[in-house]
Length: 391
Image (cartoon, rainbow, N blue to C red; front, side):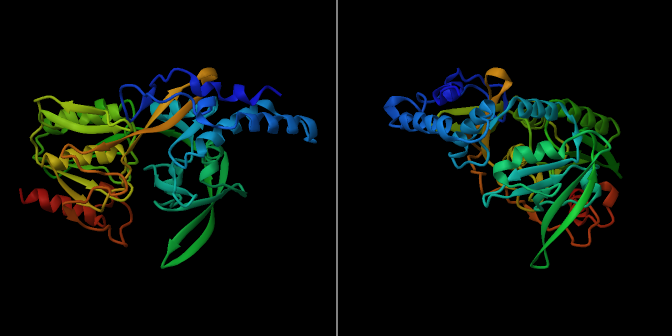
């Protein structure tokens, strides 16, 4: 077995920003495994020696190395920071490009150690099977999973199109915990992130998440609606889990006047500020949000609210206001690390607080879904239309 000291050399590589909710560069102190840090490297060597001497079974060196690095990052106690294998990096890149094969669930590690559903992507197999926000994924194909094994869970939920996967779900209903199985057939999830329609003389635009194409797609839909002479816009960010900062800033820049869009602050109190130029859009706007509107969605919502460019309608947002950067490493691996916190243009903190709507209204329990196809029961959308019709 190679020395465990070699396992951690990857953490000493130059930190090159690849893809994130942040821009600029990451800095830090010397490796936490340096002799000056007081970390007992001798203990690692001792464990290595004992394993080599006494362990009964064959040793998978690659798995040992990956496990050691994963454990080192996991010890931070941050559910959003993690070591990514080459396969996981490839999967992340694929998703941000907007297409992959799977069930169409967006998940997050919860603070109580569970895998929690943020949203089921609209039109996905998971959405069609009724998977909901706040569902807990307990098992996949009969095997237990939790926040510490979430990446493995995501890999299992992905797979070849037209193959089945069984999820064991825990859901709180009527103050009691219900556990049940759902069989879902995987298929290609092609993410067209922006959709639009006309509701009378109101333009309706929904964004499901922010990927590389979202900024261009949004502007195309907005301009198309303007040519159709709409008098106002509803922007639906409900159940949008976030995505790429660049796309979010592009949309905010298009909509807002000159000024700050978002400010990020790192551990050294260094600020990074994203700004918009003087050009802006002037159609009256309502933004719809809910408890699954997270991260990049909250950046855009917070900016529109602070500039009073939109009336925010719905429920308090998720409250994820910290920034992760993906740092490429050798052999195609990567490190996802929380590096800063973001604040709205007025300096409002979002992490663990979320954004409070101007008009708070819960989705009716009898609503069959959200969006224009459910207009008859989507009372939040009905409220947005009512507000704009009064302008």
